[in-house]
Each structure stands twice: as structure tokens, then as C-alpha cells.
Image (cartoon, rainbow, N blue to C red):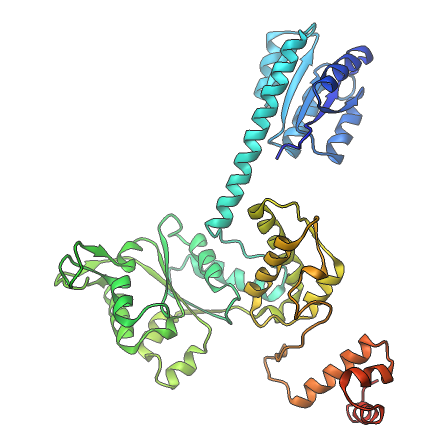
Amino acid sequence: MISETPRLLVVDDEEIALSNLKHVLNKEGYEITASQSGQRALQLLEEKIFDLILTDLKMEKVDGMQILKRARELYPDTEVIMITGYATVDSAIEAMKAGAYHYIAKPYKLDEVRKVVREALEKTRLKRENSRLREHLKVFQGEARLITDNPAMKKLLETAGQVATSDSNVVICGESGTGKELLARFVHACSNRHSGPLLSVNCGAFQEELLANELFGHEKGAFTGAGEMKKGLVEMADGGTLFLDEITEMSLAMQVKLLRVIQEREVLRLGSAKPVKVDVRFIAATNRNLQEEVKLGHFRQDLFFRINVVALKIPPLAERKDDIPLLIHHFIKKYGMMMHKEVRDIAPEVVDILLQYDFPGNVRELENIIERGVALANGDTIEPVHLPEDLRGHCLQTFRKKSGIIPTLEDQEKAYIEWVLQECGGNKTMAAQYLGIDRVSLWRKIKKYEIE
């Protein structure tokens, strides 16, 4: 947004003209940065964001057109006004084609300058507001942006991109909060169906009858209260993608009905005898081991083979901690915009705490922590005091190893003792007090676990 006191850059190689223009605009209450050199003006554009630029057209070495071009590259929403003593139609047309907001010829009337400056600033404000609203729409519409710098995630996205164009059904596996729906959106966005609808349903959120109605729809009068015909999500997703979240929560009876839809490529509304042809790609997601669910008899094997043409597994956040700083700043930007707050940074000690935490709730938990931090921050930085109480000032140990193997109690005890000793700077007496044991017991445990 435009700052409370609009910042203007004024460029003119004539000292008197520059001084006069600066004086007039200062009296209007603007913050003025003046430059008598086009070269210096280019440097200033790299150093600072301006709300409006007024520049002379004809200058030595670097002229107004070069300044206009660079301003358009760096700040496309910032307007540029050209001022020159060489008032010709050709130069005016050239400047306007290149993106100048207005063209004022010397000698100019001060009232005209004031009016044009006010109008240009208003246009800058509107353009920036529109840009901000577009960013909001991207956030609220769930734009398929997967923030990662992790090699395993990059490989997964590469595979997902290749699979996307094949039109095969896909199963996405991963712990809760890892971003399975976001990956589904990514696959849809990369597919040949991207212009079609992407609809989603949580299979665990409905009872069997309600889920059937949600997926397959009904005819008018099919049951008490069915006052009009309703299309189901399968029919509404025709030409696009249907995302079935937590598919393992679906009953075996519902699995039979879904299998028929996938095999026959048609759906039968409740109360109808006439099936409707559909062209739908199915993407399913689960936080369980689908093959184990088949072995246990909780998931039909024939549906498994139909839906599990390609499997994509998202690693937990604990296995891609190099993504945590990227995600932190993404969420700071997101919630700073949504809450209209100037929070832009996070204290290094907070990042250290978050890098040591294993995030059992994965990316969703990290997002919630950052949302809370932005909401509570009074300045522009998230500090330790803005963290949840159980995270504040220390690192929680959770029960997951990178290999996926659950650690033993001794593993946890050893890790905890090492952490306490580190926090106490190696002071064994103090560490024993925190651990609630005597110094001799601590010495025995250090010897047992071969802790240095």
C-alpha cells in the first residue's frame, strides 16, 4: 500500500528546475527524494520503493526513458510522470507507449503538476490494492503452491507432474497435516483437466447415507424432503477431478458403489433408473497404510487396484526440516496480509526452537504456530514469547525418528539427558537438579549411555 506520507522520486539535471519542483511538492506534504543525475536515480530505485516518480526526459548519460524502463521492471505498480522542455508529439507518444502515466511540458503550471501528481498517486494506490486483493484470492482459493527446497519433495513433485498428464487415478499417502490436498491441487493444476472443476469431499465427515447423497446425488422425490433434483459431486466433477480425502473412512458398501462408478464411468442418482455418463479423474488420500487396510479387510482389494494406479507418499515435516525456514516466511507473509499486520520477520531463537521440534501435526501445526505468532506480535518480528507455552523457551522431544522407527525408552532417556546437560552448559549438579535425581545417579546414566 502507499505509505502514510507518499514517497516521490524527482529527477532533473537542471538544478533550478529540480529545486523548484522539490519545493512545491514538499509543501504538499510529500516525502521527496531528489536527484540531479539519471545514474544516481537508477541507484535510488534499487535502494528504495517510491510511490511516484517524476523525471526529466532529456538528460545526459541516463535519460528519463531509461529510468521509466527500470521503474517498470522493478515496481510495475508505481506510476511515472515525464517532464521535459522538449515538448514534441513523438516523444510524448513514445513515453506513453513505454508506460508513462502522464507527460508534462516545461514551462508547466504548478496547479497542473499538483493535480497530475494527486491523480497518479491515486492510480498507484488502486493498482497496489488490486495486487493485494489478487494475492488474497490466491490464498483463499488455495492456490496449488508447494513450498519446498527438500530433494525428496522436489523428486515427489517431479513425479507428480509426470503423473498429472497421464489421467491415471492417484492415491496420496501421508500423515495428517502434510499437505495431501495441496498435492492433489498440484496434480490437477498440471493435468489436461486443469480448466475443469476440482471438487473434494472428506469421506470421514459423513454417515454412509449422507456420503452417498453427496457423491451420487438424488432425483426429486427420491426421499422425504427431496424437493428437487440434486447432482452429486461425481457428476459435478465431470471433465475435472474429484478428490476423495480420507478414503479409508469409507464403508465397504460405499466402496462397492464407488468401484462401479470408476469401472463403468457412470453414476446413478438415488431414485433414478437411468445412469449418467461421467468423465472424472479420482485422486484419493489417506493417512493410513492402504495395503495394510486391504489385508485387514477394511478396504476392498478391487477398489485398491482401481484407485491406486499411482501412489505418491508425502514425507512428514520431521524428515524435511530444511523446508521449515521457507514455510515459516511463507506463512508470515500469508497471515501478515490476511491480518493487515506489518509482521515480516522471526527471531533466530524462535527458528532454532522450531528446527528442533518434530511437528507431530506436520505443516498444518507449523502454520498454526506462525498464525498465532503473527496475531500476537506487536512489532514486525515473531519473538519466543509469541510461541505456545509448551514450546516457549525449550524444545519438545517427540517420538519419531527419521527412519520412521519408534525409539526405545532408553533412547528417549539418553536424548533427554543429553539435552538437559547441553542446556546446563555441562554442569552436572544443575542438570541432576533439573532431572530430579542425585548427582551419582546422573553419573551412572552418563556412563551407561556413554554420553560425552
